[in-house]
Length: 355
Image (tube, rainbow, N blue to C red; front, side, top):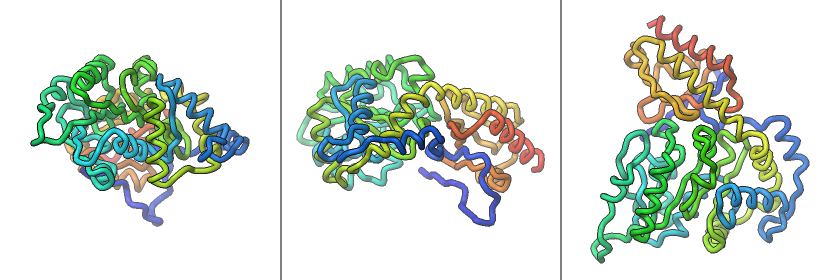
């Protein structure tokens, strides 16, 4: 599985429209002011008031008892599996899940876990597929300890797990003695798109986390939540993986600001993604997956242009996208406007006409 951004060549024109990822967002002026005003203390001893506020708010938002501020979502996933599992244990996740494809084998390298990939369309497996993958607990097979889902499913196209399927997976897991983990990198995108609250979406999941450096627009950080006992163990692994971030209120203030100001506006990103997909679909031969949130995957081969050539041609025109898993991915976010979407569609049409 590959992720190939356009090359960073100083001879290329500057990027005017950045659709590479929602991780490309820059802090807004108001967010920078919030960062500058942040009250800080030593996070290690629980003395940073801004970090404490952030963790309390995320725990409440996700319907959990406690939470921990982490540098990244990947660290949330790794620490969670290190708490839930023991060496030799088996984790079940979709075959395109971040923990399989994007975390450098950390779960095997650090924990000695194996991850069994489950198949399914649009980055999601069904409850029946999950049930069928379970095996009797015998000494001949690894203990199946955790089932993990990614909300939304990135490689699936930013697709949303239905609440009914999430509930069914929880029920099956609990009936068979498995813990449940939700990679919530874009969880709030799913909540805004469906109207389902974050606490309802995460109900029954033993651990869940939010990424603040994607659509929420903060420069750094994620927060993982769960029971108090689970969070105590997360802290132990946070210590082992690098320790506290000390006066982390500087970073946490951006996340608190994002919760106050950048959640509802995720709907704007979804509208821009739909507009981009609609415009691309009007170009003959373009194969476009209709977006559910802020990710648009498309393949221009049918229009006579390979994905790599399309990405390169757009980069020459100041538009930055990426090839991901054989398709082009465009990601809308708070630094992308409706006018930029219209211009991008026009440039793609121009490139196709020039073939």
